[in-house]
Image 1 (tube, rainbow, N blue to C red):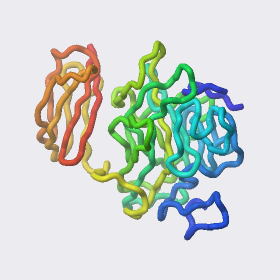
Image 2 (image 1 turned 60 degrees about the horizontal axis):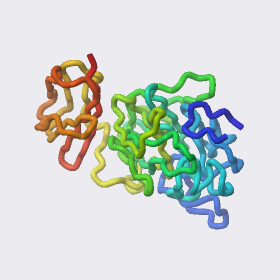
Image 3 (image 1 turned 120 degrees about the horizontal axis):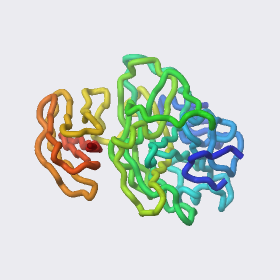
Image 4 (image 1 turned 120 degrees about the vertical axis):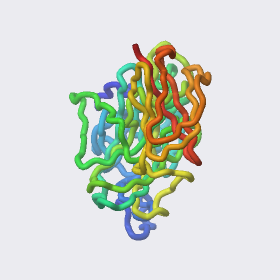
Amino acid sequence: MKAMNNSCFRASLGWVLGCLLFVAALRCEAQGNVVPNPSFEEYDTCHAVLGFFDTDDGPLHWFSGGGTPDYYQSCLLVGAANAVPQSFAAFQYAEDGGAYVGVGTFQLPNGFREYVMAELLTALTPGQTYYVSFYANAAWNGSETYPQCYIASSHIGALFTMQPRPWTIDDPWPVAGNTAQVYHPWVVSDTVGWTLVSGSFVADSAYQYLMIGNHFDNSITDTIHFAHYAWLPKAYTLIDNVCVSTDPLGCPMASGVVEVTAPDVVLWPNPAVDLIQVAGRGMQARAMIMDPLGRRIWQGNLIGENWRLDVGSWPRGSYVLRMEEAELHRSFKFVLTE
C-alpha cells in the first residue's frame, strides 16, 4: 500500500477515429481531445487503496503532480475507501463512465495542494486557440464518521507545462504558483451534481503536459463551509471527464466563458496594509467588498486601468471583492495585515 501523506483520506486509444464498438472500455471521446484517458476509465488493476503516485496504482497515463491524489473506481466492492459511488470522500456517481479522481484543493494553515498530471497525446501548437473543460464536484457526505475535508474551494483549474512534475513522498509539498490557463474563479460548492469548468486560451508555448487542481494560494482562494469541526479546514475536489481540443465544439463549454489570456484583472498587493489596487485594461465593473461574515463593507464602480481603494482604517482580516462586468462575475479574496 502506498503512503498517503497529508491526503484527506487515510483509510488505508486516447482519442481515435470512430469507436471500437466491440471493446467496452473504449468509447468515443470528445472530438479531437488530446487528453489521454480523459475520464480515468483505463487502469492496470482495480486497487482498493487511496492515494497514487503513478500509473501503476492510478488511472493509466495519469500521475501525481503533487501530493497523493486518490483514484475512485466502480469496479470495487461496497465498503472500499475509494469505491464508486460510496467512498470515504463522498457519495458520488461518475460524471462519465465509472471512475474519477480526487485532489486536495485547500488547507489551513499551510496551503497544501494536490494535483493530477498527464502527458498530452500531442504537444500544443503556439498561436493556436485551445478549448479546455473538465467537471468538478465538492466532495462531501462520505463514509467517514468525522470528515477531514468539510469545505468547498474556488479556483480549480488546468495548468499547461513544458515539463512533467512527478511528485514522490520525499519531495517538498507543491506551492501554488497563482497562475493557470483555465480556472473556475468561483467556489465549486455543488456536492450532488458536477460543475463544468471550462475556458479557452491561446497557447504561447508547445506545452506537453496538463496539471489539474487549485493553482492559487490561500490568499486568493475563496471557501464555503459545509460544517464546522475542531480540526483545521480542508477542501477536497473530485475531477472527471477532462477535455482539451482545438475545435470549439470539441469540448463542452459553459456559456459566457471568457478567455483568460485576454487582458485579465488582478488585485494587489495581497496581503495589503493600507491600499489595494485593481488593474485591468479597459476595466469597467460594478463591485462590492464583503467581510468574512458576508456583510457589505464597500460598494461602487471600478473604472479605468488602475483603480485604488484606501483600506488603512479597516479592521485587519480577510475580505472578498466581487465584480460584475457584463456577463462575467469575478471574485478576489484579499487579506489586510499590520
